[in-house]
Image 1 (tube, rainbow, N blue to C red):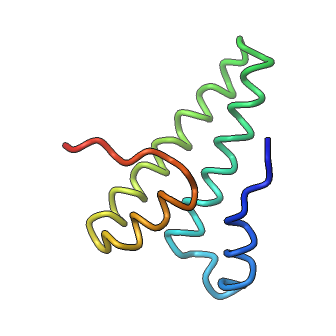
Image 2: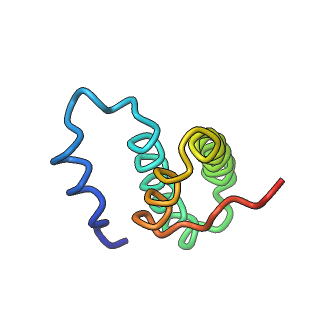
Length: 90
């Protein structure tokens, strides 16, 4: 797993006061997802981790849906910085 350059942006701009922001939460979920994905590449039959990964993916998706409805510009910036795919149109 490589270090994400977005972590430096978050740590400098948004310290203690913005840890509840949608962007920070999505960033944390993305890091957890990347860790779990690399873990599951080694341990294919770890079903508890698979379940946890699905739960975290769902939470991140809910936050991204919320952000895309509230502020499309912030959503686009976040997706490009984290290098994740856009949500499917519903």
